[in-house]
Image 1 (cartoon, rainbow, N blue to C red):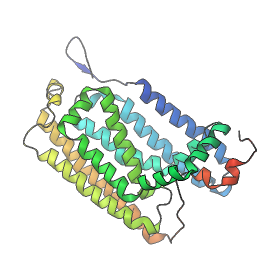
Image 2 (image 1 turned 135 degrees about the vertical axis):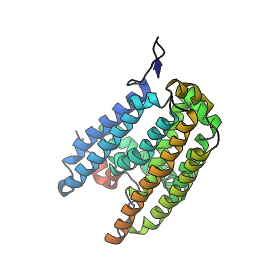
Image 3 (image 1 turned 180 degrees about the vertical axis):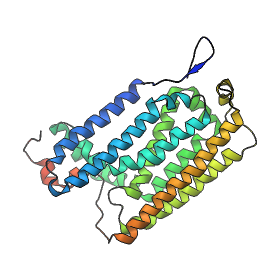
Image 4 (image 1 turned 60 degrees about the vertical axis):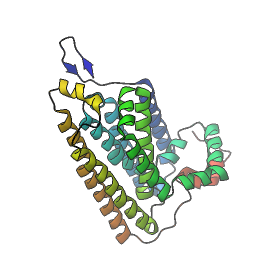
Length: 296
């Protein structure tokens, strides 16, 4: 938020260097990887296009949440901050996971680097650590911990006051949400894993709804740092906090309910399928990745 000489707040697009650079790098790697893999996809091209569309949509939501005036408005309104977080965790994260980004982005690297990264992620320690980290219970617990910890007033206000801590908050929300949604809509989320997905969605809906209710029904303001900028906009700080809590409580519950219905539909309409070992589809074809022929 920028306050003019006349005391009028102005909300504009903002382009922090590291955020903008990482967004540009991610879409660039995905685009290059998509082009390289598309010609190899054969009958899988329609699925590859759907994945790319999901990734681009998720990337666009993330860019809007972080760079648009919504990001600046979130410095002044707690409710806008909640919209930003919910967009990242409930819209952006599942769309990015549906885009199957890991394998595609791997193919965006130069040939030698791709082989080196491929060997590293296939190594036993890395593969074992990845499987433990992305198992349903650890992924659920990490996301729950991030949500509850960052809404402790002292930590939340530190994030609002310090850009570096704010970046850590956003990164933890996004990364843990990606881990959570990976077990719900990601590679390897099969009929056999639908029970875990349903349980993750239901319990996440319950505990996030409880947190939203606590914030919405609180008798006083939890985050005093919002009092001054909210009052400057002519909005009651407590009402702004109540609206933010409702945003987490009601639309959040609806989003998880939609996810649960999608999982239930998958459970009922698909037969059991063999789960892949990891989310790096480009690594599944070992001969193609390690072939001496250099890919362009």
